Structure formats: structure tokens, C-alpha cells
Image (cartoon, rainbow, N blue to C red; front, side, top):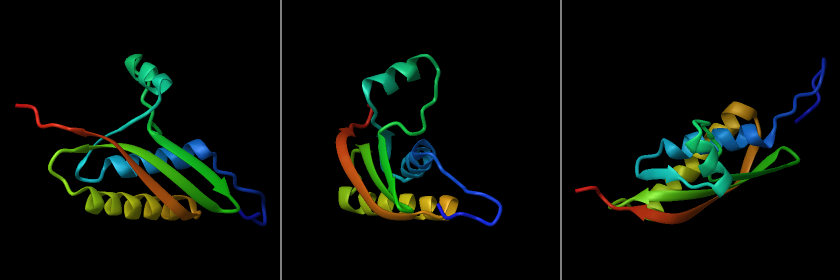
Length: 115
């Protein structure tokens, strides 16, 4: 981030990842964000990890985001992914001032309706 007159602002990658994860999870058609084994283990002990299934790299005020998502059955994957990309990029830009240069969405599964 740019230096300000009274100091410097630094935003941890984990903060950007949390913003991206929360934003993506709010899109209709997203069932869950998928994480690693350590994220799953933390969830079993009651630790809420809002960056689950999200990888972020920040280079020169630009954020590069990769998301792992489980979709709900019956939703259009291309349309839902476009909504995820728009929402994540917008949230990162408005909350951090970073330019979201790339948002990759990896569909890792589809959840079937429970009957």
C-alpha cells in the first residue's frame, strides 16, 4: 500500500483472503468454500476460518485470488462464477483499496439436493 503522510498501511494476505472468502460464500449457488485438511481440522474445534478455500497473493497493490468452491446443484456454473469474480473483486477493491487483478474460481464439487 502507499505510504501516507503519517505512516504506512499494510494489509495481511489473510485479511484479503477473508474478504474474498466471505464475499464468494455470499453468492447464490455457492454451497461451500473448500479448504485444506488443516482448515477442516480447525473447523471441528470450533475455529471459524473465513479464508477457507482461498489463496491470495498481493504484489504492488494488486491482488491475485484463487478460490476453491463447491456449487449447489442446478445453478449455472459460468454465471455463478462470473458473479463470484465480480463480487470478490469489488469487495477487495472497496475494503482495501487494492486492485483485484485476477480472480480464479475452481469448482471442486457439486452438492446434490437432500431429499
